[in-house]
Image (tube, rainbow, N blue to C red):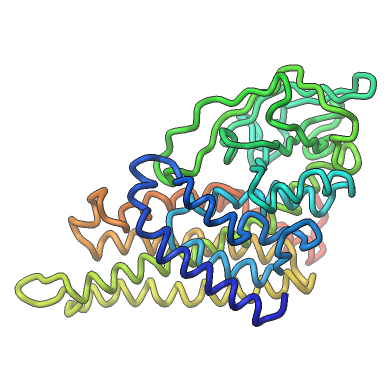
Length: 384
C-alpha cells in the first residue's frame, strides 16, 4: 500500500483503540477475556492479517509500518493485540515465509480474515530460549508424521485452530539441529489443551499447555526442509522482538499520558502535585526514555526492511524498550501515589502487564547474549 493508504489504516487503528477498546479495558481485566465485539471489529479492519501477504488477503505491511501500528496497539490492554498477534507474527510468518504454496493457500486466507487463530508452539518445560532441552518429537510412520510431547505458555492455545509445532525429528542431533516445523490442526485426534494460565497481568491474553499424544499428520504438514525448523523460529522471533519493542513504546506513551493528566489535576495541600519538582522529574524521565525508545524502534525497523540488520537491532530494541516500559510503569504508579496501587487505576494494570515483556520472545538476558555474541563474532572471535 502507498503512504496515504497506510496513514488511513493507522488513523483508523488509533480511533478503534482509543474510542472502542480503551473504554472496555476494565471489562477485559474483570472477565479475563476479549469481548466478541472487539474480535469482530479487529477482523473487520483486517487486523488479523495486516502483516500477511496481500495475495492471501492480508495488508502486507512492511516492518516500518508494522511498528507504527504496534505503537497504537500498545496503548491499550495487551490482550487486544494478542488476539491477532500470532496470526500476523510468529505463527503466520512461518507459513508466509517458509510454507509451500499449498500450505499458504490452505491457511493464510483464513488467518488473514480472522476466521482462524494460529498458535506458535515452541516453548517447553525444559526448552525456552535455548532449544537444547526440546523434547517434543515427530517420527515418520509411512506417509505420516506422528507427534508426541508437550508445550507450555502457548499464546492463544485455548482458542487456536492451528498449531505451528516445533518437534525434534532427528533424535541424534542436539541443540537447534534436527528440529522440524509441522502444521497441526487443533482438531487433530491426540491434541489436547490445558486450562488457560492464571497470570500476574495481561488478562484476556490466554496461554496454556498443549499436549500431543500420538498425533498423526500427513507428510505435507512439514514446513520446509526437515531438521531446519529452529532456524525458522529464530527468523520469525527476530521480527517478533521488534514488534514487542514497539508495543512497549505504545504502553509507555499511555502511562505517561495518564500520569501527566493526573499530576496536572490531583492536589496535595491545595495545589496540583505537578507543581512538585520531583514529580516533574519522574515525568521527564519517562518522556525522555520514551523518545529514545521510539526513535530506536523506527530506525531499527528501517534497517530491518533494508536487510541491513535483521537480528542484532531487533534484539537491542526489545532489550531497551522492555526494560524502559518497566521503569515507565513503575514511575507512573509512583506519580499516582496510593491511587496507583489500586486495581481500578489503569497504571496499576499496566504495571503488571509490562512485566511480561522482559520475558517473552526471549528474556532480556538472552537478548544480551545475542547482541554481545554477534559483536564479538564480527570482531573475529571464533565460536565456542
